[in-house]
Length: 242
Length: 108
Image 1 (cartoon, each protein chain N blue to C red):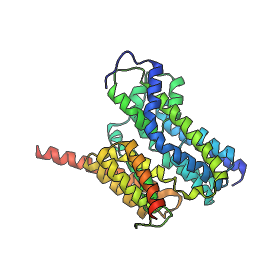
Image 2 (image 1 turned 90 degrees about the vertical axis):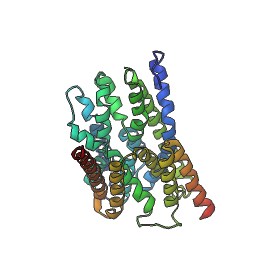
Image 3 (image 1 turned 180 degrees about the vertical axis):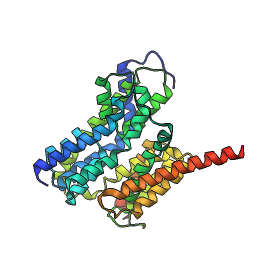
Image 4 (image 1 turned 60 degrees about the horizontal axis):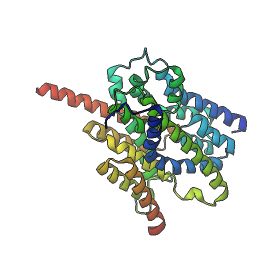
């Protein structure tokens, strides 16, 4: 991909929206099932729309609604939200050098829109066109496309949920698993990453019954430690040989 | 939980979610993450996402279901194979979802 001066703000914004499409395919069914599940968990229409439009965090919304249905108290749900969303910090860290030149007027909306799918769709643009100073328009286009589709899907889910009998048994939530698998697989290109991900996956099953989603954070932290530990160990054994 | 508490919950979730995403951006000009932390953090997203999707696929109703009656497992395996082989997100999502629904409705 080459960067040309022909890239205008508008063309980058539209290109961002286009680049968001593959992930929107997985996001829409997930948003629909969120809308239906949220009503089943006892939230009203506006609270459901509020979660998607103000919080805008797919898996955390899913976890929160599940915990609400199970009668978990507020503090633990907020705690689980922090745990589930902590990974966004790494996305912010990765994009940090690229947004330094922007004012807060840009950083606030770009921060708000920083979800898994947005990062996955816009980061390659930054990597392939490091010299462009307009990449944030691409980021913004990806983010807006995802924000709009997520909220429309939620409303569709609310509508379906109250009109179509048994939609919650269709298995639309498989879309989340499919999307996450699609996002993880391209990362599995070296031994440390594979070891970390396998560790995390095994532990997530073994620790599933721990309360308050503790198993999720435990599995992720141990997986990260195994991956990074192996990376350091491979590095040091390589240095010893040379 | 009553309505007031649900709105309070939504507000708090919005606050912590935005804070996590915006914290580094807020002071982008003066923050530099330690190199080691940055290296370790690259494992974060794949590990967290995996800790979410593995139980979703292997135990969709809360109990381990490693059998052919579990369409999530079949769809998940197909997603893993396509994702690993093609490294293409759209292809992985579309083909595995078609397989999942086909298996669920036609086979089971």
